[in-house]
Structure formats: C-alpha cells, structure tokens
Image (cartoon, rainbow, N blue to C red; front, side, top):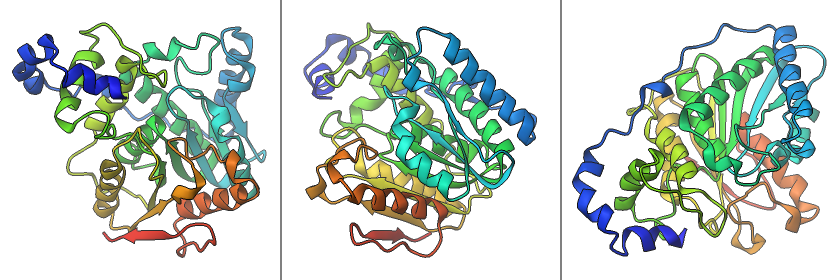
Length: 328
C-alpha cells in the first residue's frame, strides 16, 4: 500500500492538524462485544447453513462460485473446522484445503463474508467491523453444531476474525491456524505511527475512501484493523489446545512481526506452543498463502502440512518447509 505512505508521510494537512485528537480517539467499539448464541445441534446447524446457501443461490448479486460451502459427512463428527476467507476474496479460496480437512473426517463450514463474492467487485468497500464480527460469531455457532471439537482457520483479514473468535468464543474454539494474518500493515507500506490515525480517519469514514493498486479499500481494510485492536490485552486463557501461523517472507501486505507476536501472546496465555511455518522465498508465494498454483504437485504436501499445523500434534515433518516452535 504505497499510497498510505504518500497520504500520511507526504504531509496531509488534515492528518497533521488533527494528529493529537486522532491518537487520543478511542478505537474500541461497543458493537464488537459478543453475546454468545444458543448452541445448535447438528440438524439445526445444517439447516442454518443450508438456509444461508439457499439465500445466496437466489441472490443474483452473488457469484455462483463464491457461495458459502458446507462439506458434511451427514452427521456430527468428532471434529469440525470453520474456514474464514480473506478480504476481497470468497469461500472458493479454501476449495483445496477444505477437501483435505474433509478427507480427514472433518465437517467443514466456509461462510461468505458480508459484501464479498458479489458481481459488484467494489461491494466489499462497504464492509463494517460490526458486520464482520457478527458474521464470524454466527459462523462459529454453526461450526460448533457440526462437530464435537471445533477450530478455526483464517487467512489475511479472516485470520483477524479467527483470532478474535479464539478469544471471545474460547468456550468453543479449541484450535487456531492463521495464514498471512493481517494484524497490521507491512511497515514498508504504512509506518507504525500512521496506523492509528488511518483507523480513525478511514475506519470511521471521516475521510473519503481511497483504493490501493491491489483493489483494497482504506475504509474496509481499517475495519479489520479495528477488530485486531479490540483483541483482549492481555489475552484471555480459554480452552485453546493448539495455535499455529503460516507466513511468506514475500508478503508485502502484513506486518510480519505482528503476524507472529499476536498469536504467540494468545498461545502463551493458554499454555500452548505456537508453531510458525515460513514458506521458502523460492516458491514465489506472496500474501495469499493458499494460492499454490505455482507449486504443482508440491501444493498437496503443503496443504497437508497446514492441517498438521492446525491439529497441533507432533511437529510435522516435510521435505518442503521447516517449522519452528515459539515457546509459551
């Protein structure tokens, strides 16, 4: 997001004049608080998922390939996983990984985020933090009805929601895997001192929206950053059993320090060890660590590695990558 540097460092009079107020303006919002939903049994959870899918099928504004997905074994399984896609993308981002989970016996729920997967490619600019947390909370309630043990995988902005659920729905979420988590922008794109003013100015839509060369809306991106800033500090001790993160050194979107620091704090609070998987630069994988088309046959092995990281069993071994553990 080079445009962010140009905006903030380049001497915007509004930012300079209001800087004190921007840093003092509280970022936490009451609407991000969560009231846990009543639990659903398998049949009820399936009905909710199918109702969502039917509504999307009937909506001409939603692309057919981007509808929510339910991979079900027909009854409640020992394990269910919720997959939360990234900003600007849609459930099809998880097609390959979902099949790996399903083959291991999981029921899998991949809901479409608000304003995503539509024929209007700019619709996601309108997304709000409260919509995103409501969507995530409803999604994990469905997932909880699909399996006895529930975990969450999230990528990019979806990883922010996954971490949020691991903290606010600690009664449900037992496993956490975050891929390319967007807890903050890459410092080369937005200096740390600029993030809070940007959240205030664009997250509250005080300034007219801007769109980056990647098609990212400032107003939308700062909704995810707002949620990241609402994560409990210090993190809560919940029932989390495992936590892992996968990142690419070629990712120019996320803050690589925050990508590890935030889940490490959550892991430590729960007495578990965070495992970190860094993809080799030679692969050419950038921000979307699920876009593995260039890897050919090796992609299947990496997908299996992601599931191993999620499950938190013995340290996975792979001829492709090395994982490191970050102690609690």
